[in-house]
Structure formats: C-alpha cells, structure tokens
Length: 412
Image (tube, rainbow, N blue to C red; front, side, top):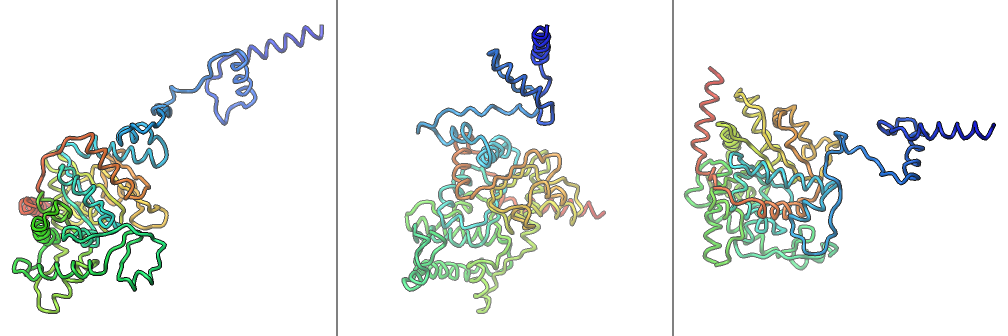
C-alpha cells in the first residue's frame, strides 16, 4: 500500500512537471523550472526558448565559419554580431541605410592623428569624392599633416619603442609609430608662409575660405609633382567641400598665420564667420524636408563645434528647430569622466543638439578610429553608389542669406 502511494505521488509530480511552465525566469520557482527542464531532457522533447519574447527578436547568432573568401561587407554583416563589433555594424548600417540618403547632408568631424596614418588618402578622400561627406570640421593638426603628402613629402612606419632622445639626435619626429624627418615640418611651414603672403589671403575670412584657398595651392602642387590625389585639402577644394577648424590657432598652420602678423600680414581667421556658416549649413540641410547627419571620429572641439550648430540656431538665434537627425560617433572616450568626447547622444538631447524623436538613429561605437574608419569606408563604397556632390562651399552665400532671413523673422 505504501508503494502504491509513492507511485501515485510520483505520478502527480510528473503530471505537474509535464504541464508547460508559462515563462521560466530567474525570479521564478527554481525547483519546478529545473524539474521541468530535466523532464523534457529525459523525454527527448525539444528544448524551449522564448523566441516570441519582444526582447528576442534580434537575429540569432549563427555566423558561418570564416574561410578567407569574405569581403569586408560579409565580415561586418555576418560576424560583427556582439559588443563593439556589433556597434560598428550598426554604425555602418546607419551610415549607409539612412545618412547617405539623397536628402541628408553629412558632416564629418575629425580628431586624433588620422591623416599622418594615411587615412586622409585611404578613406576621407574617397568619401569626399563619392559625395558621402558634404562638410568637415577638423583639428588644424590633421590638415597640417595632410599637407605633407600633397607636397610630396613622406611619412614612415616606425617602432614606438625607439628612444626619443635618439630620434631627436637623428632629426626624426614621431607621432606614436609614424616617423618623419624634421625637414618635413620646415618645408610645410615654408609652404604655408609663402602662400599666406598672397594678396587673396590679406583679409579676415572663415576657416572654410582659408582652407579652400590652401587647398587650391596644394592641389596645384600635386599636379605639378604628378603625384595624384594625396591631400584631402586638395580633394575638398576640387569637390567644393568646406573644411572648418574649431581652434584655428591650435596647430602649426595657425602658428604660421600668427607669426606672419608680426610682419604686418592681414590674414585673420574669423571664428564668428565659422559659427554662423556652420549653423547656416545645418539650417539649410533641415529646411525643405531635408535631414542633417553628423559622423564623429574621436570627439573634442570639432565634435562640439558640429553639434553646437543646433543650439546656435535654436537657443541663440531663436529659430525653431529640433536638432540633428543622425548621430554616429566612433570614440575611445568614456562618458563618465565628464569630457565632451565621451558625451552620449542622449545627453546631447538635453542641449537641443540631437532631435529626441531621432534618438534611435544614434550609434556610439567605442573603437579606435584608425580601425573603424577604413571598415566604414569600405562598407559604404560597397553598398552605396556615389551621391551627387552638394558643393556646399559654393553655396555659402545663399545659406548665410537664408540664416539671416530666419533670424530676422525670429526677432520681429
């Protein structure tokens, strides 16, 4: 009789186990959930997972083995499935699927020594020529080192463990593992001092005007030397892409401008013109149903200079606007230190820099830009046909007229 009771009791337990558990959770009945899973295993039943959960709608992680035949597109879409690899995939897809739509104006900001590493030639020039970048804000250092290549001067790969005392004695300068002769600096300085003394430079101007004039001379030097397109300054001049710098005095170019003023030179970079011109570009992008997208490489002052265009339009000029539509940043800076380089797009919403309705169209990828930029460029080139060049440099007067008109209306 006792055995029969035990059997009946076990049967009741099995019956309970056989009932489907609605949702197994870490907060659920542990013993019952465990017993149910073990019973399914003994019975040879299919294991269950809640694929119907709203949180499990992402594609299953099931990449094919890498065999060496993959293209960059295949790697990004098929194997960049988690962590910062997934953020890079999302960045590439945001850039290609939305930011490169024909009605979106794309601004690029650049910090970090990208051009000394050859990324101006390898990535930025192709993006410019394909119409994938419409305007740029860069550190002056990137533009200065970019000019070395346009003048036929060379940069070399080196060992970062080399003694800097020995390098100094040898007349070699290094940017981490990029080495170049000290004469490269002297030659580039001499080039800038020579052209800046020209008549067309003898006036206050925006940094876009200044870089366009410099690009004209770099482009001509490339032609004379027969070296092809090496300088993004030259490429931007040819494509009508305006290039701004948020800190004109913070580079060797600015240092040479300053030195020439001691001799009476009249060349002055006007930051007021830069603030208003960049705001006019963004306002022009948003009017008529268009959109504005910002691709941020690094962070720093160029990042803020691009994003502050919206507070300039809204808060300072009093023009109704909602913020940039697309935000894509590649950075190694953390948000919790308080620095702008690591500030998230969500934080930018509170300043009016990013349209809150477009916050899902914002991606931050925590990755070295020298790794991410070539991959992003290759992905874009493979997935998108070139866009028609906007030639925003040629439209500066029209854009500023529209900005002034809306500002006047806001004050009436």
